[in-house]
Length: 464
Ligand code: ARG
Image 1: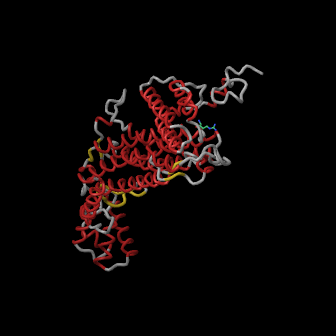
Image 2 (image 1 turned 90 degrees about the vertical axis):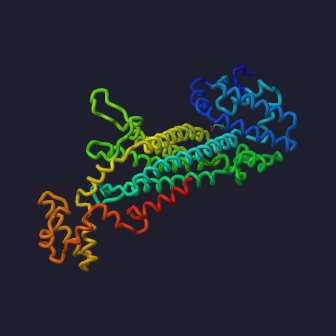
Image 3 (image 1 turned 45 degrees about the horizontal axis):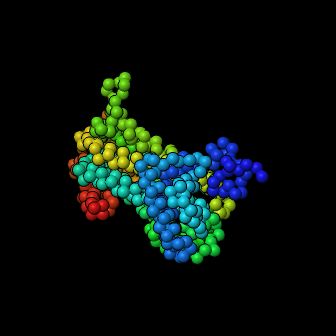
């Protein structure tokens, strides 16, 4: 028989020699899955307690295992743990160290379990925590935006479509649009969390086990609602990670849109907001510059988060049931996406809370670009009884007249107006001001300060 002294300690019985170095490099996941140490140890402690409760191992061994695992955890947390690539992953690193600490009982921990249900459980616990982190990060950002909305509920600014001036809106209304978007994001993380909260532990390798385990007990100990009902599904499912990435992608897309607005608004051409010094950077050559780097980086984060979503979808798409080693590639994508989403949320909350909207600059800009043309058309319909299509036509002629004169609509004289439609009266000027324009948009969900304040009150009650 060949020398098997280099063979893997865990399955050396079957293998004659240790792995090639390149094999070890492609196979090992310890470099990244060490982040699952806490979840792995929580899962193993629950499993050991259940094995003892079911008389599968002795109470004494279970106690030794559970205590020993706490020692391992404290070593890892203190940075005193020597992770080994030869031991492949966090699961075998922890178990090997447990054996060094407590000896023979360590070998009983893996009864009625496989790394397949173990990793599925660990990763679910990790992603579940990240859903909670995302929910609180989003809530903090919603509060920052709500504060902005409250401070400038009735401040006018141009509203855009096609990034062309459309109609005046209020700053409060614009801020609340993002609060709505973020609340849907929060809902997606809540939904995903609720759906993923089933426990794979006890599915073993793929088929379940012949030991009389109690899956309700481990599920409950780990805070899951119930055990997963199909062992094949339990070890092969990564929907929970994909749902997290999908929710993260949509949320990051929202952050990116807000970031883009901040980049535009803080430019010299707009000057709608001033970013605080804490959230701006200078240029090494151009002394006048205040760059919105954090906003630009948030805008860019969608790339890697969406990339992670596509990467994991692609990993999973052709896999036959049940577990395949391909699935080890799930973790780095999710870790990176989660880290960057949380960072982007925190940076956006800091930036949004700190920025100063420039009321005068926004108001000056709100009236440009014939932004009250729709108000004029509506007035013609309401006061003169014109069909909307004709009112649109009359207004178009007035806009073109103002454009020819190089002025805005309220700068036209009554005579000018009458030359296009003789029914127009002085009263028309009442609807041409931007404040009148926004105040008139009182339909539910509209931009009038009155409606905006109602929504602010609703959100304030909901977010505290
Ligand atoms: N490191 C592995 C992973 O992350 C653990 C599961 C390994 N299972 C196996 N049958 N090789 O997927």
